[in-house]
Image (cartoon, rainbow, N blue to C red; front, side):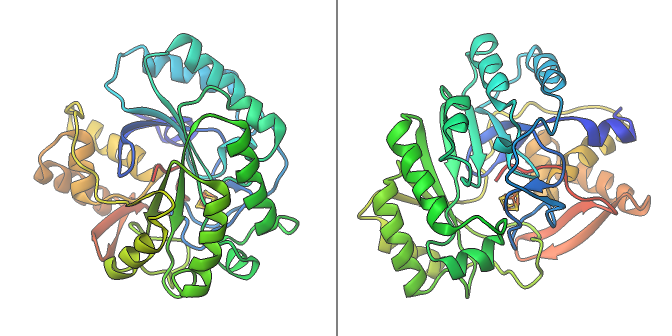
Length: 329
Ligand code: SF4
C-alpha cells in the first residue's frame, strides 16, 4: 500500500488511460505546480511558481531510479509520457531521462506533452532529441487571447511562443502534434481562429488535436466546447493538416488491478492525485468492474480523502485538500 507521503513524492504515475495516447506511463519532472503558464483550464489547479528558469526541480537520479523499477515489471504501454502538473521542460535534467529511456528501454515510445513555451530554446531542443512524439499547445495566436487563457510569465509573448514552435519544427524531425484547447467565448470566434490559422500555416504540425474541458478546470467559468463549434474549427483548419477532435478514451490492454479494498483505495488515491477521474475512467484504467470502483471511491469520500464534483461528462472524484500532482491529457 502507498503511504501518505509516498503518494505525493513519486514522479512516475500510472499507467493511466489517456484520451490521446492510449495506455501511458506518466513522468512528472516538476512539483505541483511549477509552470511557465497558469492556464485557466488547467486540471492541476493554480500555478504556485510561475517561472521560465530551468533547474533540477526534481532529483533526476531518483526519477531515473523510480522509472527503472517500474519499467522492469514489463508493463504493456503505448507511451512513456513526460507530463504532469507543470511544464516538464523546466527541469534541466529532462535530457538525462530521455537518454536513459532510449538507451535502457528502447522498446517504449516516449512522448512529451508541453505547453511549448521553451521549445525554441537551443538546449531544450538538444535535450529532447530522439523522443518519438511532442505535443505542444497553441491556444491562441494573438496576444490578448493568449494572456486571457494561458496567463504566461510576464516577459513571455505569444509571438515568442509561435516563433519557438516554428524554430523547433525547422530543427527537429520529431513527430509533432499541436494541441488547441478550445475555451468557449475566448478562442472559438472567427478572429481568434483566423490568427491561429496563420500560425498553423507557419508551424505545419503533423496533426492538430482539438481538446476541450473534460475534467474540472482551475477557473469555474471555463466550459466545455460543444461539438458544433469544435467541428467548425476542425473544418476551418483541415485543409492545412489532419485535425482531430480528442475523444473519449478507447479501452485498451490495461492489465486488471487486483488487491484488497485498502490497496484499491490507495491506487485510486494515487490516480486521482494526478487528475480527477470518473468511476468509468477508473474502471477502464484498472480493468475492474465499475461497482468495485464505486464502492472504493464511496469509502474514500466517507473517509474525507476524496470529493466528488459533477461535470457534463459525469461525476469526477478528486483528492480533498490537495493540489493535483500531474495529468496526461
Ligand atoms: S495546463 Fe499545462 S501549461 Fe497550462 S498551467 Fe496547467 S500544467 Fe501549465
